[in-house]
Length: 437
Image 1 (cartoon, rainbow, N blue to C red):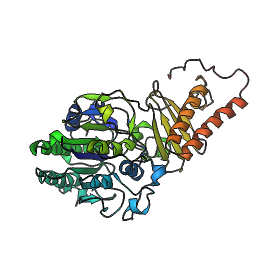
Image 2: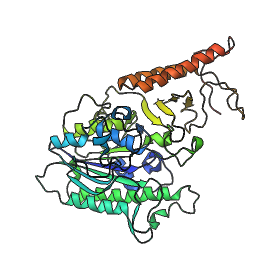
Image 3: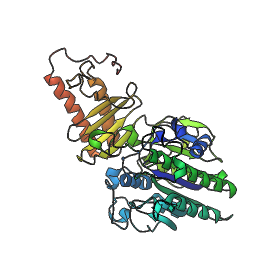
Image 4: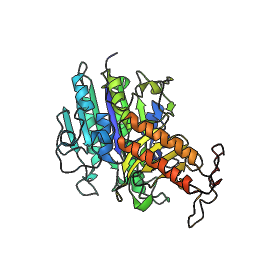
């Protein structure tokens, strides 16, 4: 079979639970839902850092942010990969070497000018441009313009042309939330918070439908890999100190990830193993049949997408620095637990089985608190120690010294607690956790 074309569709700041195919009961996303039914949906996909530039650095270099060095958003620089990244080779360089054409439309957020590894660079920008071309009312919605341009690119493809990778990087549903008026109808006046966010989700969904229809009408669909995902989620300023993104809660780190490849992948498959943006580069290279550099931090998810039983990690590992307090964090998340460790000792533990909304921090319980929420919880020290050990091993696999330091800080907090506790005050390791009320 000929090498496939690759189309990456990436909204900015889209929560996984903003889509119908991920369980949302009020959103209107028929086209992305249709894409999921025709492909493979990954239910536990995570960003590597819950903000734009660090995540995008990883999705194009294949290594975690601590390794490529882009650990905050960049503005006013021509080419962040060339100037600031410690890793200069991108997936686009590797695909060009393999004979692919490269095209980009929309938000880039890694520099202000066209990078040398793109053959086509249209309607593209770094960040902080309006979602509208001109005044809001009566002007053109920028995602519509971007979609027009990428559709024209798809329609220009001819039999015998080299394969291509095309990135469609939408800026919405990133704030400021807005969309054409017709997309507000399912949300406005119905008690849905942040109607503009969900209207933008629906507006992008319509453009996804336009892209999918174009692949069908041009005959490209069968051997084109379409990957739909986001760089990180959206918190609506809900979390501690009004932090926006920049936190390790699931609404910020859990992202949609859908893969469709009619020629190779069966439809209507759901994958529950945890995957991450570090897996994007190896997956794209695997699709293209290109060699995988040994320096990559992730693995191709194609075997999982095919339903094969392959060895795979059972955790997600996320890096972060909070925006306001500049707290350096690492998150280690399993199916049942989430440990958020910090260099300054402000650690957190969440029982995801009993508290999936992550509203009760049970790190070092029982403890006094003004609302007396935590006095009756057991001591989860054995759980914390196991998670900290997992965090340390995950950090070691990617040479993240900061992650190892944070894991040691977590273990030190447990030991300090034990040294101060009266004899017999801790819960034995075999005691089952008490369900969260």
